[in-house]
Image (cartoon, rainbow, N blue to C red; front, side):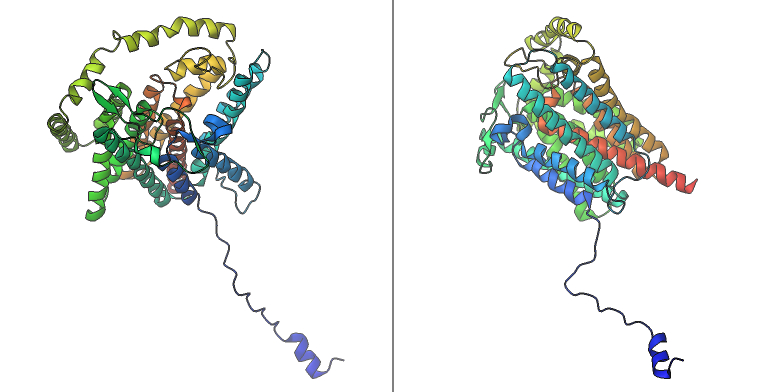
Amino acid sequence: MTTAPAAERAHAPARRRAPRRGRLPRTRIDPVSIMSFFLIVLFVMPARYVVGPLGGAGSPSSMVAVLLLVWYLFSTLSPRWTPLRGRQPVRLVVVLFALAVLASYVAATTRPLSGDELNAADLGLVLVAGWAGIALVTADGVPDMDRLETLRHRIVLGASFPALIAMIQFFTGIEVTSYMALPGLVEKGASVLFEREGFFRPSGTATHPIELGVVLAAVLPLALHGAIYCRIPERRRRRWMMVVLIAGALPMSVSRSAILGLFVAMVVLLPTWRPEWRLRAILIFGAASIVMRVLIPGLIGTVVNLISVIGSDENSTTRTGDYDAVVQAVSQRPLFGQGFATYLPRVYRVIDNQYLMSALETGLFGLLALLVFLASGWMLARRARRAAADEETRHLAQCLAASAAVAVFGFGTFDAFSFPMITNLMFLLLGLTGALWRLQTTSAQGHG
C-alpha cells in the first residue's frame, strides 16, 4: 500500500520549470526587411564599384543577391522556416531561365574558349544565381499585402536616391559618386559624365544614363500608385515629391529609351484611370513641360529631336547594322548559343539589344526563356488585377504591368543584362508581381 504522504506526492501537480531568462522568443525572419537592406545596396552604392577579382559579378548588390538565394534554399529545408506557400509561377520562370543559362554554359564548353570568355561564363552563373535569389525571396517571402506595400514604398524611396544624385550631376557637372566608393572596391567603368547636345547625361548611382532612365521609367508607376492612394496628408506630400524627383530626373538622362519607356508606362496606365485622373495627368504633363523649358532651355527640344530621328540617325543605323552579324553568329549555334556572358564587346562588338544578345549567348532556348521572363511579369500582374477585390489593389497590379511593359520595350534598346541595377530591379519586380498574384488568388479562393 502507498502511504498518504507518498500518494500525495504521486498525485501532486508537476512543478513548472521557471523560464530561462535572457532568451528571446523565436520569430520568423522578415524577408521584406532583408530585401530593404538589398535595396540600400542596390540604389545607394554606385554600381560601377565592384570587388576587383570578380568584375561585373562583384558588385555589392550582386553579392548580396547570391546570399539571398543561399538563404532561400536553406530556408526551404526546414518546415518551420520554409517560405514556400502553395503554387508560385515565378519559381517555374526562374528555373526555366536558369536552365537556359546552364545549357548555354555546357554548350560553351564544347568550343575553344579564351581565358576571358571562360571567366565571364563562370561569373555569369554567379549573376544568374543572384537574380534567382531576388525573385524567389520576394515572390515567396512577402507574407501579406501590408508588407508588400512596405516593399513597394521602399523600392520607390530607393529609386529616389539615384534620381537625386542625377539631378546634382546634371546641374553641376560634378561626378559625386566618385566620393561614395567603399574601401576595398575598385572602379569598373568611366568616372566622367557623358554629354549629349551640350547637356551632361547623369547616371546617378547606375552605370550608364540609359540604365538610369529605364530604371526610373519602370519605378515611376509604383511611385504614382503610392502618391495617389496615400491617405495621410503629410505622407502624401512626401510621396508626390518622390514622383516629381523621379519624373524630373528621367528626361535629364537625355535618353530615348527613358522617354519612350515613360510613354509605354503611360499608355498602359492611362486607359485604366478615371476620366478626371487622365485630364489631370495631361494638364500636369503640359505644365511640367513648360516649366522644364523655362528652367532648362533646350532639353525638351533635344529629347524630342532624338525621338524624331529614330531610324535615320547614326546611332539607329549602327544598331540595325548588327542584325546581319547576329544572324550569322546565331546560325552557327542556334539552340543554346555560344555561352551566357561570353559575347565580350572588346572581343566581338557592342550589341545594344538584349534580345539579340540573348539569341547570341543562349540561343533560341535562351531567347524563349527571356521572353517568358518578361511576359510573365505582365501576365501575373493582369491576373492579379482580375482577382483583386478592391480598386487600390487593381491599380497596383496595373502599375506592375506598366513596369513590366517598360522592361519589354527597354530590353530592345540596350543590352540590359550587362547593367546590374536594371536587371536586379526587374527580377525584384517579377518577384513582387508574383507575391501580389499569390496573395490575391489565395484571397479570392478563400472567399470563393
